[in-house]
Length: 96
Image 1 (cartoon, rainbow, N blue to C red):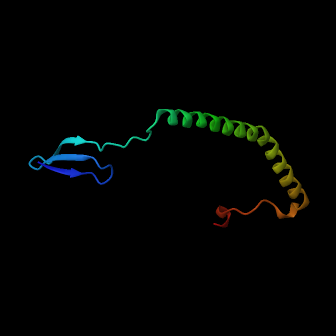
Image 2: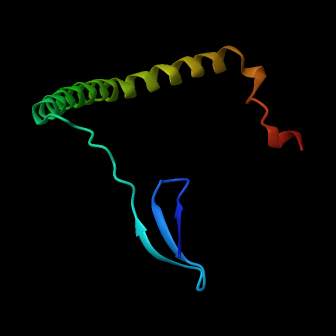
Image 3: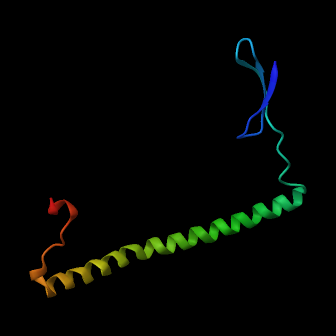
């Protein structure tokens, strides 16, 4: 048997040379991300405030989305009425 270290995840694999099969797998131990629980709690509280702000921003954008689309449509309709000879724009598929 011989040991191989996975280049992707760093896990240690024990492989049997005769059967060419992985006999055991030991995942690489990950370092702790949080040293202090009070720090982790404060970070989570800050995340909830950030999520709420992001939600309120998206909600405000959604409320004005219909108005923005309506204004864009009105502007394009006005342009189409001013230049009716232009017709619809050429598409790539029309050139074939």
